[in-house]
Length: 380
Image (cartoon, rainbow, N blue to C red; front, side):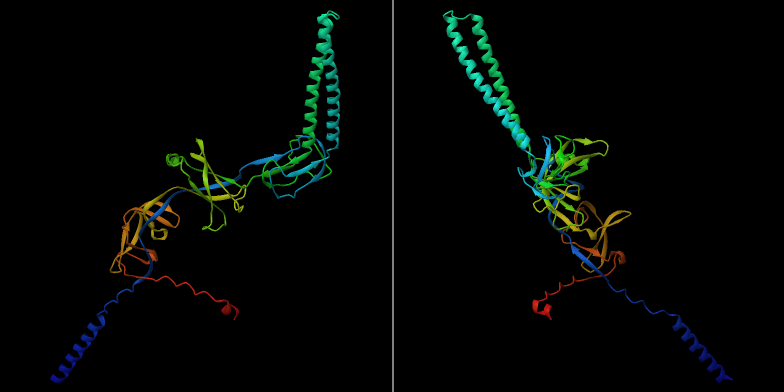
């Protein structure tokens, strides 16, 4: 009886010990470090830029028209060609103008001969009137005839000049250097003087202009640096971001557009490579000055939350700290920090979504660039 009770008690104690061991949970394992990318806060010279959208427009635009009418004989260029100032573009039938010039010259020679005779007569009548061989009235008539013929000769000379100009206008030259547009008339057609429809339009694209507008709030900054050589960069859509066209600010409008609250600016670009084309939309970056000692971090490091912008700072023990920052301005792929960070701080640039304050991190090393492949390896 005593033995059976002792055995039952022992079994109960063993069962309780097993139940107690089953109820105890194992200690949790520490969370592994979160892999992140990081960058060091540094000071560097950063340009102060104003970003805008602009439109390319030609430096000059000329609609070429005929100044005299006639049959078009030749077109000495192709549509879309680059033409130079003074280059012959069109040739009208010049024979009527050459004949008119010859006729005007003949009339001038005739009237010059008559003028010479009239002046000689006037001189003789003056001498005869002094001796009273002729009346004063006859002398005055001779002088009046000479004066009238002198005026006729001047008119003839003007007619010769007009005929000469008309003959020159039969050869139509390019008034500026630029790119020719679509041809509006073909050889054999009758061209009318100043008809309103241009024969061709020429756009000057070297140099070229970019027109853009910035908020009126930037006017004070623009006026402060207007007298300096302000650099402007323009990049067409789809062009490489690291190879923009570089020009200079050439125009600041004299009034603010009250409808849009902006002010108009223009920049001039050499455009020797013809990267900018009239009518094209471009991204414009106006560089007012360079801040020599700006505190910068990569744009990817700054996160915008409900309390404003913040970053994850990696402390020396490889844990993170959430730190609010004050952003001064954006500068391309960098952000200039006004408050909240110090030079040398490490900030997380990739992997922030998995982080919380105090989380342990492991900074990933940047991938090594692949080794260049030799020509012999390429062949194999």
